Amino acid sequence: MRSSFPSRLRLLGLALCFPSLALAQSVLPAAPDPVTPAAAALQQWYLLDPATDGVMGVSVNRAYQELLAGRPTTPVVVAVIDAGIDTAHADLRRVLWRNPREVAGNGLDDDHDGYVDDVRGWNYLGGADGRNIHLETLEETRLVARLQPKYKGKSRTAVPAAQRPEFDLYQRVKKSYEAKVQENTERLQQYGQAYADNAQVADLLKQTLQVERLDTAVLRNPPTRDPKLRELTGQLYAMLQPTGFASLEDILAEMKNGLKETQNQLDYGLNLQYNPRPLVGDEPDNVQQRHYGNRDVAGPDPLHGTHVAGIIGADRENSLGIMGIAPSVQLMAVRAVPDGDERDKDVANAIRYAADHGASIINMSFGKYYSPQRPAVEEAIRYADSKGVLLIHSAGNENNNLDQTLQYPAPVFQSGQRIPNLITVGASSRDNDAGLAADFSNYGKTQVDVFAPGNQIYSTLPGGRYGNLSGTSMAAPVVTGMAATLKAYFPQLTAYDLKRLLLASAQPTHTQVRQPGSGKLVDFADLSSTGGIVNLYRAVQLAQQPAAVK
Image 1 (cartoon, one colour):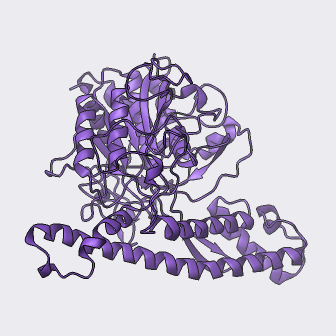
Image 2 (cartoon, rainbow, N blue to C red):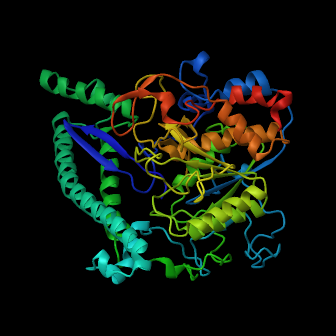
Image 3 (cartoon, rainbow, N blue to C red):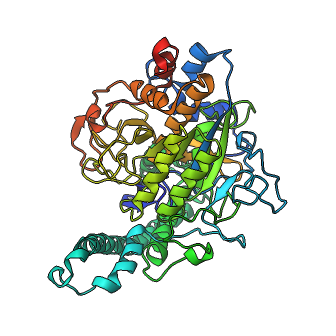
């Protein structure tokens, strides 16, 4: 599943919490078009330098200004395995990968790779007739649906010894599945009424003030002399400011979206009878099957992948919108992540496709907690390693300790060996204070390699828009963009070199922070193996040294 987390909103005195199940987001886009570079520069705090700018960015601007100016670059292909990319976005069009051996739209497999018209990449969630999967089930749902007919109502002692490991899996998954059904049912009931109450109060306030919209301008200076109303609007203005929303209506819209996503989770993600996979027309259990899907790399909802792509490499030369981290990048779109849990078979094939078509780096901003076809994914990761490909994976947004609960794709093989060509990334915030570790981020002293900015990250969105999203989904492409930058300027660096330099750039940070999930104060350095946040300036300095290549 595309990494998600609960966005905590407070409106009219009621504490409301809605999970964004489809993606990690805290603010839906409301930016006008076009966004000027000057305005975007103020939004892109993650490009700034901790020492010179006072925020916990990764020193991208400083690296370009002081270390990389005037140096030549080499094109770098970066695969984005995600929900799809808006290929028409003005800030992405020029930097999209194009398959040089494929002729667009002729209905032929010109390069004989088994994929027809794969000009921009491939979509493993589509059928030959052009239809696409949008909503999918969770992996727990699929496992319960498969195992329940075999084990429902049975005791462990009644099951043959050879089947007991599978029976135990069923019991674990069933417990997790039932907890999610209960959680989403209760949330829908509780917050549905809260939304209705808040919307009613907001309408009443607008009528009283005789305004059409409760935006920051109205709340800051309301058209009333009533001291109680002015006090209320002042409180609402103070509440609105740090959220990034422009109005209370925007908050209500986000709440409504959260309710819709919760309903979708019950209707689709947790529905034991729902199965959209026949649309694809493949054999879901056949992990050896490679050639299925279609060429639609945008899909029905490319919001998440478009945002990820912009962080990595939005056009740095067009004087529009934002600045991607990497220069000379070619972004390959590989669609394998629905609204729901991705399937291991699709992930494995997406990795292989990227490796076979020249990707040096793969961004993977997705994850789940059950992986029934894990060996197939691990085979694909080994295959990518044989091709010299670096994989960068988001740690997840359930504020879990991954040293205790693995998220997949895991940073270790089933054998326990550390995966040498994979980096796992947690999410950090703008300020070097108790909130430095984003409260939604997973963490782990051994299983999470490093942190990167992932809270309130400004990037591209479909339809030529821009907006802030949050999650480890945003932290991973920060690291991917840095890896692509190093590869562009220092093409001799291998995947292992890139990983070593990126991790070495993260100096331990000993700020006392709130541990995600518990809120207790801990040393930030104890939340990952490096103990720090990646830094492009330091990584470039290391890459310039004679011993950079090993």
